[in-house]
Structures are given as structure tokens and as C-alpha cells.
Amino acid sequence: MQELGVAPLVKNYFQDYIFPVNVFPKRTDLLINNKLLKPGFDFCIKPNSPSISGKFDLVKMDTAAFYASGSFGNKFALLDTAGWGKQWQKFVQHNKRALPYKGIVQVTYKTPSTAVSMTQGITVTLYVYHKAIPENPTSISLNIETTNVVHKASNVLGTVKGEIDTFVVFTAHYDHLGGMGKKVYFPGANDNASGTAMVLNLAKELAKTGSNKYSYAFMLFSGEEAGLLGSEYYTLNPAFPLNKIKMVINLDMVGTGADGISVFNATANPKEFAAMDSLNKTLGLNLSLKAKSPSQGSDHFSFHKRGVKALFVLTEDKNAPYHTVTDTFESLSFEAYERLYKLINAYIKSL
Image (spheres, rainbow, N blue to C red):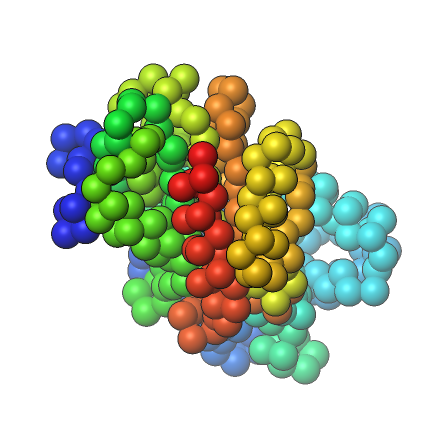
């Protein structure tokens, strides 16, 4: 931001805060039938899992096993719900904690994914890719080290002053999922280096303009993956009154676009969406914009629930990686990126 000519919105750009998070900084060893699995690619660990070490029996679970008697307290359940139907899948999701097992191996038919947890639970759950599981699995050996730490986080806040002190705010979260062990990390190219990059692209151009009617704020949040923590902290500790905001545009996962572009909160802000879509057509950008209802899924929500107008823009591609080690720059099409940038740039200049 400093290099782009964007001034700090708070001292030295950084707004610091802390939150607890469960992390996997050391051992993440997993073997099934003595076959060593590759972390991140063959398996992921549920983010609230505790540490565990040892060798255990692995028991395949079916629907009848929910009602079977017996002692399973020192065994792992192999849970493959494919073909069970939505009713049983829902039942499993709601009752995993009550299952009488030492831990759970949940079979997945996609690249394993994970998330962030602020707390540590009592049961280990592993998401394992089906092709990585050997035939007739009967045993599991694991050495997983987890710890709950106090994480020091920072929002990064910059501004370009305009003729008036009413702000158009651009937001994106720059945090992602961290790592799993010493060698595996989750790049987060689409989620959300892409949105962060577009905010910086907009900052670069708007800082060069020289004379803008509105002031602009560029807010890159941390803690989004842990529950919108950075944007929530900001809205509780704003650098200027929230009623000085004309519009928030939140950019989250804008590196694809094969299946169109969702604009969340559009139904709550129909005039704003209509103006944006009109520009899309006038400029011949040919973006497939979809008006969506309000969403709680990204940082715009921290503003929206406090009465600030906000739109959340997200590009769609059903084949794009999400919360996996494969969310890399090379995996993204950037099909809509440049056209979306032109649309947002034109829209905010039309305000």
C-alpha cells in the first residue's frame, strides 16, 4: 500500500488483535494398513482435532453399526457415506460426537479439505481420499501433534482521501488456513489472494487519479476463516464512523468465473445491483451477474448487520479447488478477473 501511494488509515497501516486457534505445527503422520499417506493430498485433519499417537483397529461402519452393541472406545470408525442418501448423511453429521469410537476416518471422493477452528475438541476426525485407502483396511497408525495457541493477527488498512469524507470501502481477507505439519500448507490462491490482489489493483489506480469525489478505504482482513474475526474487530473499532460509508464492496474468491459471478446482498441493494449490471451491459463486458440474497459467508456481513450497504462479489466455478492444497495460482482460470476489475472500477466512478 505504501508503494502504491495509499496512506495508512491507522498507525503504520496495522490494526492488531488476537484470537485462539488450534494448529498442527509438527507431526502429522498417518498410516492405514502400514501404508503411509501424504498429508494435504491423501488426507486432512479436522481442524478441532486433538493430539493423538498410537495404533488402532479400523472398523468399517455401516448404518446398522449405529445400533450395534459392543465396545468401540479404542477403535477408529471408517465412515463412507457415499450412497447412503441425504437422510443418513445428515444423521452422521449431527451424531459424530456421540459415536462410541476413538476417532473417525471420513472417506471423501474429492481432494480432502479443511478449515480453521478456534477450539480443540476431544475426538480426532480425518478426511481421507478414497483412492489413498488400501484394500481391506483394518488398522490405523497415527502420530498427530496439535496445540491451541494465541494467534497475533493484523488487519491492514489504507486510504486515499477524496473531496469529501464519505467513503467507498473495498475489502478482502488475506488470511487462509495455515499449514498442516512442517511441509504442508494451504496456498489460498483463489481464497483469497485473488480478492486481495484485486483490492490492491483498485488501490493502485485510485491512488493515481488525484481528484476523487469520495474517499476510499482499502481493508485487508485477517481472521476471516476463523469466523469473520478481523472484519468484526474492525467494525467494533472503526477508524472512522461507520455511517460515513457509502458502500462496501467485498471481494472474495474472484480468480475463476466459468459459472458466472454471484453478487450477494444484491436483493437487499437492488438499485446498486441494477446499476452495476447496467454498466456490465453498456461496457460490453458480458459478465453473467447473479443477484443473490444476503450472505453471512464473508467479511461484508460484519458491515451489513450494522446497517452499512455492502455487496459481496464472488466468481463461480464448480471445478475450482476450495480449502485444499490444490488452491494454487496455476489452478485458476482468471476467466472473469480483468472484466470484473473493469466493471467495479467503472461502477465506483459512477457513484
